[in-house]
Image (tube, rainbow, N blue to C red; front, top):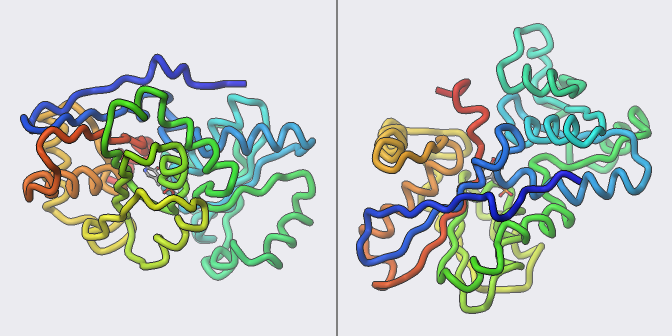
Length: 290
Ligand SMILES: *Cc1c(COP(=O)(O)O)cnc(C)c1O
């Protein structure tokens, strides 16, 4: 089974803040398409599908979805065909954007559905109908978060990450990734999540996957909602890339690092705090967004 060599995941020190240790774990460098956290979310799901005789993976996403891109690439790599249920039936008659082109090139069968149908993606009846339409398919939810995904995300943290850091920061979408980090963490550590979208449901969603309480959401940096950006955010991302040589995208990692930088400036962390920032990838869609 394809797996990342833990030794090969680079850490990079962010040297700006003299009183703190801030290292960024570059999951974005593990694979160009199965970027960052998405591989960890998929790996046990794919193993489960193969072990249980499924012939395909089926999942959901928007036209720029990192999860769609990662699922297609992982399917290609591991030899299991993939089906993408894509939001927006108007897209069927348009030129595919680079994310969808790449997914198709990786063998994903794209099915465009209306926004009304797409809204029913969590509805058991709709899923049953899809299962009948694709009887050999193993269905993975939008964003890839389920129990096996949370289990896989525990592996993002190595043994030394558990000993070397006081605080671990990550971007939050559906909450599957942070749930895995929380589950893997020691009780001495605090996991700080920076939601990329508005919504009070997130804390509950995360609590669904873990009983631990050593975590907190910093909810002030969604910039108006999912995939919403401001000029200030884009300027920050450019400056960050120039200063540190670390590419960010505006949907997840850019918002997290903007928020983290502000917390640092506000003196949020005690002197000497050792912070690990998880770079969760997501750069595949970057050219098509900017
Ligand atoms: C999907 C994604 C996330 C969010 O992960 P969740 O498990 O849904 O919270 C964070 N960062 C990047 C770059 C992503 O692509």
